Length: 314
Image 1 (cartoon, rainbow, N blue to C red):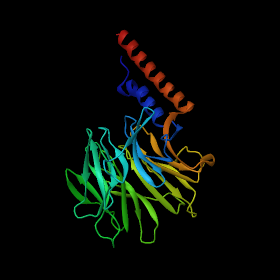
Image 2 (tube, rainbow, N blue to C red; image 1 turned 90 degrees about the vertical axis):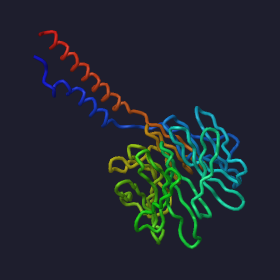
Image 3 (cartoon, helix red, strand yellow; image 1 turned 180 degrees about the horizontal axis):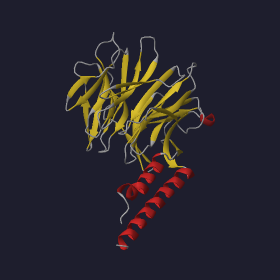
Image 4 (cartoon, rainbow, N blue to C red; image 1 turned 90 degrees about the horizontal axis):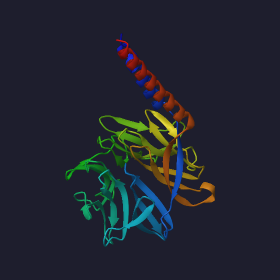
């Protein structure tokens, strides 16, 4: 007789469980745009394309990085350009300044489009998803903090977290879930995830918690500080757990973007006596993870062999 349905799929289930619980190490790559003082990566998509900005004597200019090569990325006529997001279509967003104001931008198919919140004196775009939907901040009243917004199809919606003094939305995934940082009137910061429900993130024991990017699995990256303002420590928030990132000890750790493969970009300061450095943190399976995966695959093979023998015995 054939094995029962649970027996047929037991090996597959074992493989899935083994893989899901496999631990991950990380491989760190320092990103430094030649000819510039400081490199700040901001976002990475699933193709490994990275955008961010460089700083030279107070001047901000954008970059695009792929396959080990940096390309300058500047809005024509802008005083400074800061790319902050890139989606899986290669659409790049961010903000730029002129001598009189600041605007958001979208770059697609070789063309720039300016984004300006109605009535605002300044518009900052922080993130974009696969649908081209944007999150950002706008300033329309100098006596009030910046307002968070979500934009879709040219329609803007204010997206302030209820009860927060200020909301900074830094990421949006393909499910329209927003991540970022909120502050109270006393200057204390917490992370947040805002979808159908609101989750406020505070690392246990931390005085300040900051959250930046989010991927489609709802994994966010951020940093926290203890009672002293520095150093800061990087983490990712996965399924309700705060997981430390495998970064070198530094005065300042700031992960900013994460893609669906778990690749993370950001910057660190003071690692091994160095100043600000951009980084790419790539997940690498540990030997234990590989061993568990091999055991799972072996279990699948055995199960399929048993099934084949059972058929042949009929």
